[in-house]
Length: 406
Image (tube, rainbow, N blue to C red; front, side):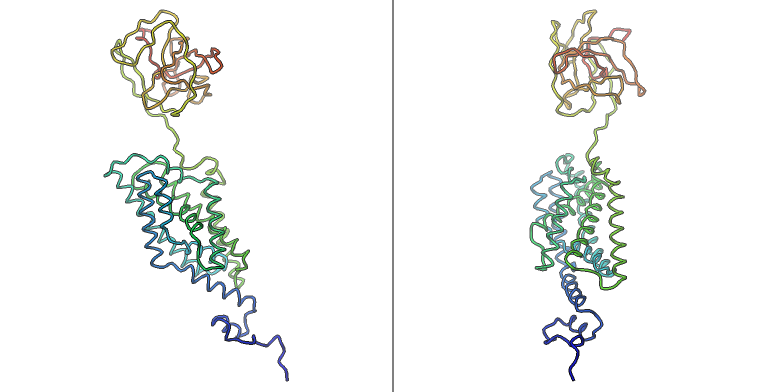
């Protein structure tokens, strides 16, 4: 009596793996799911967080923090190179794709522990600024904002990492560097900002890390499903869907539906500082400070027969009764002043004039805005060499000794 083919085992069951052989002998799992289960077991073994994973995460965090202190992009890449393969982070996507809550929780916990080490080292580096007296970082601050360049690099690194770990059970060096750069760098910068108290680093860097982690989990889940990894039960489909939806909600919530990308989160916004006005004593002058971009568009200087006043305590000039002339004179930290269409900081910026530019004061009587600032109506030459009227804050001008009615 012959046995139906549908009930036969493979010709040589000993060639199967132990797990696959047990499932095949029970006859309870279809052959395609047996193959998927075997792949999941191999991938799961490759994503176990080991002691080396935590140790090299600490090393990478130390190098990244040193690069932040030195404001050195080269050291930043070296820190990402020293990071271990971030396979536990890939395991988060695998747990989502398979719908295994236990597997997802183990890999997520291991990833968060390593991330905590990176954040802690960043905090220590931030506290070190008070001892080393290092200046505020300038270049690396751009790694604490969401940008399409970083997202594309993260997605590409995730895709190539999953394809490699599926075929070779390891992550090549370039995708590993990309993942470490996009996950560990903003996290270390967030810790650094928390420790040093520098604005636009904390919590912006932590928000960027959360967005990148959610994008990695969603992208990895999609790639695993495309490669044939799927849940072994209906509950797994439900769990994987819930985790994916939560990841999407996290991305939208943290990014405010794309406003972070458009607004370039963590970019430092120049905020006008409090004006410090010195009481004028003839023949001294009262230039004050207002932050403007360091490279304003230069404008031609108005030709005049009168001597240009110099911003020194000993210089004196004799102004003519009419017209009144003044000179743009802001502190050396800034390059010039904005000229606006109306006497208000909310009005349109017509142009910017560099320090030393001579302008004509149309009306010496200042206008006051809601904040109590004094604005003067002036006339200047624009870039086309034509006369144009505008408004500028009085404290940004070097003017002759003011008359009693000014």
